[in-house]
Length: 413
Image (cartoon, rainbow, N blue to C red):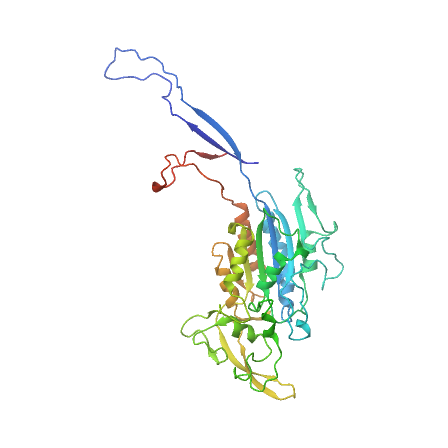
């Protein structure tokens, strides 16, 4: 293990003869250095190599290509972490879906996955998940390079992740990534996944914006109304049964008229709606995550999502119960690619902005998610691989008004 040595000493006069040009006949005697005090102390550099990584993955009907790209490129993500000094950190890797149910339709019935970490294959075949709800790979501590794992010895860590991360596309279309994160971290069924001394990285992968609702009052937002005029808030308060409700009740633009057609950011950017009757504010989730570890410096966030702009509402039609065509509106995608399209991630982008030095965001509209995963892995590697020294430094003069005058010198040996 590397160590840091602290050395404090009184500088003495160097040994030797000192010639005095003004007194050429005077003999100068030898003076041996006699420092008043010399003290050396070795302190171990405690490097935190524990990290718990939570992947929050959208499992709605439009996510097939993105899930395929995630599992195909996960090996690149692990390779970056494996190249950190000392090798792969001690990792717990968990997977949770964005599906928390509701009462909207068959795919949203009940409580969905309820924040339970997923450790069984849904789409993959011929593989097995980990014995715990999460994947574990930690150093055995014997300096042998071997690791303690909780998955089949015939599989690699990457293969085990690929086995459980391909969730399929039968999840609820009202995605609740932030609430799902919160429930996964507080769910007693996942006990043991989070370690007190570990970094926590939460990685969101979704092509829709956050539609998290309050567990008590929120499900009412998913009610199916019998309306004939979805454009009239007075006669149809919730509008069409679609993800546009997530925008209407979760995002606020100026002027605040969500169902009006057009560019919503002509004068100023849209913001998250902090007084929604159904949806918690973004700051509530950011404050939860910052406080969850007790030390915000241990928290890292990342997102592969739709860009937050442009925000454009456009007309569309749906089929009513009697087969008639009914006019309504939809939120136009903020990006489109061969892999699909994504809604503007206004709420999610606001969430990541709450972690300015410990977050990274990339677009999900890249057909290949390799670059996005590498960017996230690089962030984790920087945080884990370049730790700061922690602890108090004694002030030499005890006067806080002139800043800290350190009473030591530190040498990296």
